Length: 522
Image (cartoon, rainbow, N blue to C red; front, side):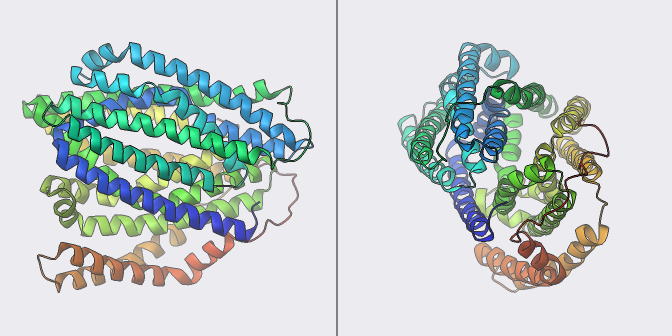
């Protein structure tokens, strides 16, 4: 386990960098939405749905495999073999990425024309294809540094990538101004590809520097590295590709079904872009704190599971769940309270404000689902998460076909509410079962909810006494006061022991009881 000072340093670095990256990305997305419009954002999201399928094929399990294999070699008798293990995973990632890139490049026209129903996405898909092998290699390198408990290389490469991507996209959009939505979307994708290439090259440079710090000894890959790697990759590749394919099909269906309700393809694409490309990124902006926690906890959870340290695993999971519920409830409450002002402030759109109002209460479920999904993979429950994801995707597609032609975007919001509740509860139930834990309603639900009520009341009161035209002042002052009160109410007996507990050293426990005793790895 990481030393307390190293853990705190990594946590602070990830949290601060996450806020900066998400903040810059959020501001850029607001500018982008104003430049290319809601229809452009819809086309952008459609192209990403196909690209994400190729990304899944190229990278699914690569980072996880690198983290687990490198961590195992570093903890073994010949830690120098971690370099060989990383090399094998990186080469495999490069091959998978090259194959995915070739398939996307060659299949860009049929995917755009027949799957997405919009031929304007073809050029965007072709421009994104070269990024895939670089993305896969970078994923392996990030997994290596995570196993080494070093987060700075990933943070620095992502910072450079973000700045380069945004600068290039802004320049390209000005060059194609007036050429149409298709060219604007293609300019965004070209900038993203350049960013991925530079990020990979930077990660490779960091790796060359860090390789000298590995313990002396044999640097070649262990003889059994192939079977060990594929035991991790195959379940993740198969499950995630199938799930991603269903998601791509769903994303293609939504605008088509909305068009049946609205009678206009452009209006349907604009609604889809406002929801997926504008409202949802706002909801996930505060996830930086929990994302940092998940990144740091994954190696600890995996190690506790492998070494069958049941008590340590339960403590880690309990703290993770408490912190997730605490911060996600605060975020959900604030988004619900300030939904309409945020929609006006960021996008000048009452439509986005309406989406935030409906989706704000779902924020805790979204955050909890993401955290629990990562924890399940850390304890070897990849197939369980795949099973729930598959069931959810099938249900979503059926509900979309039934609801959207009759109810429009309101039906899709209802589908999203059902989907988030279903996957969150199923994953949480499985995690508690595998870890031998019980649900704690007071600590995880009642206390945070009771603390949130006075915090929201205070925020509402302060905002109501500020000038109506000062949206930034209303949201900033009211939100800050409410958040401080909420955290103060949660600090004693909840946040304080959870945060300080993350810094405690690992206690030695007998390794005679497996945390998977309650059932098979599903």
